Length: 81
Image (cartoon, rainbow, N blue to C red; front, side, top):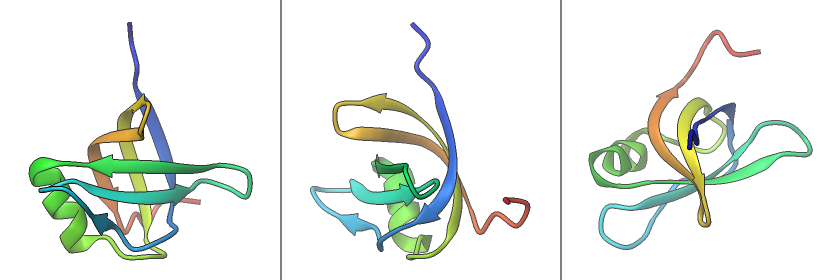
């Protein structure tokens, strides 16, 4: 089964590191859609280090019970609408 999501949006709150190297944050795509996302491992460390509230991001991940599990992220995207 294919389970891939591509979403562009703005970081709603500063990423919050929790257990080990996992980082959680929320992305607002538009007024009606806000998605809880999380990243772990080296990607989690990178998110914790670089992401800030208000940044534009483009994320590829998969949906799970916790939200969107991030597998790839671009930040400070200049070509987003």
